[in-house]
Length: 197
Image (tube, rainbow, N blue to C red; front, side, top):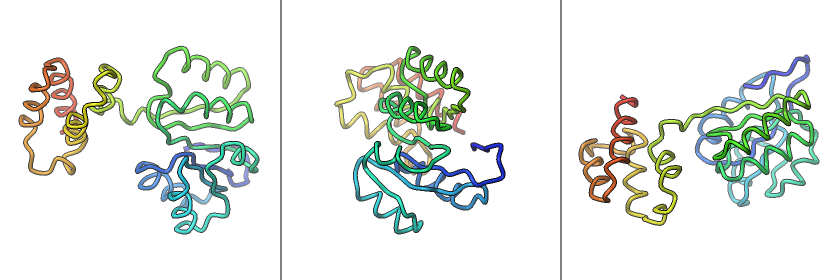
């Protein structure tokens, strides 16, 4: 949570309207008396319209330049990790405090550049590594060349939460992963399952 050192409400925008933004951050931030959600942005317009209606928000866009023209103090970035660098740097260059969900970046160089810029400008840059033990995220980083395998992606999604996996036993999921010829991934997923329990 970004807390500004003034008595006025923090004017914030949410960039990216996926599950975590919808289920966690929008309800939390709209209920917080020190935060005013000034607007939202998403690359496709349908979620923007839906969230604007649900939360009675005046501003919604699919355009980063438009978002940066709003009167803001902070942004909450909930986009795909590969989009973080460009979005975060634009927001920092505009002088905004930035909170980033998921890994800050896939590369050390980008992470270092973002943090160095924020520090040099005296800006707040915070992030939450909420997917640090997410097997799908681990796989994405370790084996990017196999991401086109749709069946494997479906199996990995089952591992993310017990609710999604339902009655499918963990050893069945691990067995399917092993069938794809990746014992190392099966071990990583096994450790993530153990940590999840």
